[in-house]
Image (cartoon, rainbow, N blue to C red; front, side, top):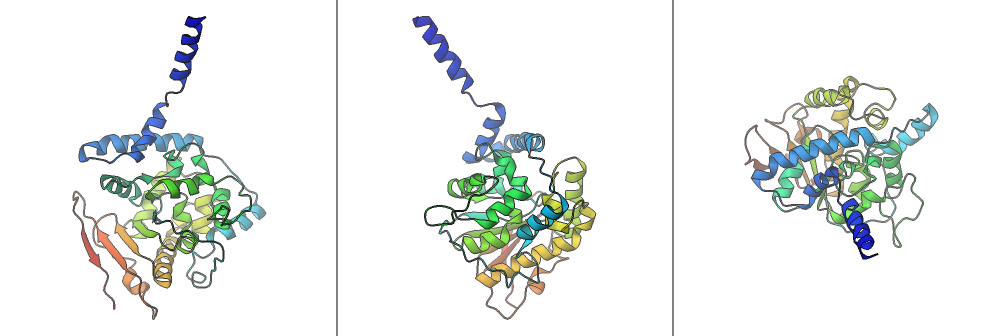
Length: 310
């Protein structure tokens, strides 16, 4: 009888060991050293591959797609960022939201943050536990839009699908990025007034379309979320997304200025041109503390520069 008990305990303990992908996800809880970077990036590559295989394949009919897509894109246009209102509860959580899209340098920013000892998480990559596939689901983004701050003092409607993992990431991590946050700028910039915001970007939207096309053509980023957010219809190839990329970048800067929120814009490489953000975002309102960092290739010491006031 004693031997049987020991055997059961041994089997239970063995089955409780995390699978390799779970160990990869544990990197988000570590402070990175320079020597760790390659192992960290390898872990993220395996996580991304796993996400691509397990992400939910939600497909909405045309009428449902149009309805959900309207919720997802509200407040992210140059014509409605100034009139979009959020009247729900707010949170005092001082988290850092990286609002950059896929293929914009968000993983490099995560690595830099973790080298500073800040836990940086991508919910969709399993770094906050199972169920992260909802990060890439158009319905998941819409559900969070409707109730970003749940709880006794917050909103109470049922969120379908369950997106509690998004709020868990906000509470457990110092930095959150990638999906779903790249699609939630209008709501998080209103519901989290004490947060800080980062926008990682390619140096031009043409560059971003080129890089994200490779991602889509390789079979990643499937589903209706990207076509909704960048085109408003499905299907839509990345070649149609340039103008919308420019608009999204402008509205993020303008929204930060409207609410006087700190925003750090990180360019993947080289000098920023194309968008000329200081010009396109100029207005008569008081400016937010907006900064940019231009990171040249093969350098780990970027220069921080404040944008001119004129």
